[in-house]
Image (tube, each protein chain N blue to C red):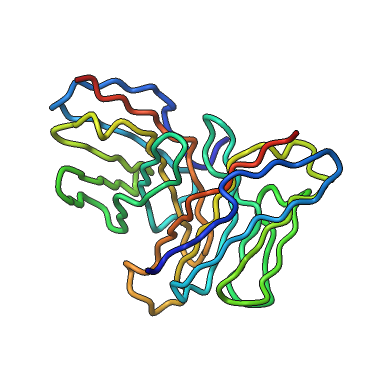
Length: 118
Length: 111
């Protein structure tokens, strides 16, 4: 059953604590993305990675960190430096390359993780 | 200036009518355009994508793209209560692996 799995579904963070959100995909996609969504807002890009061991900052990277040690996995750490972490976090993936079919050049999303502060 | 703009709504449409959702973008180099549907508390799901000027139809959905005027729209025919959701417009510039999203339009279909 192919797809993108995010865990946990709900996460609570204490003051000063780092927390890590998991994202795993078995779609053989090269590119993976992390977005943040606040109520009534669109998606804002935190980090993205187009290949293993490489990643780039998005529009709102401050207070977050990522790693890409395996093609299938792209975990996001919300650090204590992120002062307003309460949001819905979405992971996405897609194929890459100039010659991939158009239908594969599409981002697909996991179910999301809802993070709240205790 | 926002790069991708949508009317936040809410847009209320009677059941069976046509719902029209609009999106404008600022980057003339944009080449790929996507419409995602997001139910409350859920993640976005792709419903349409379009690359060329003109119309693209898929069932009750039609995407329309006008690159000269820098807008893309989504028409939903024979609207159903299950179409009630937030619709996100996303745009990708050529050669860019990132998507830029609008803030979404909340659509409510009134039975």
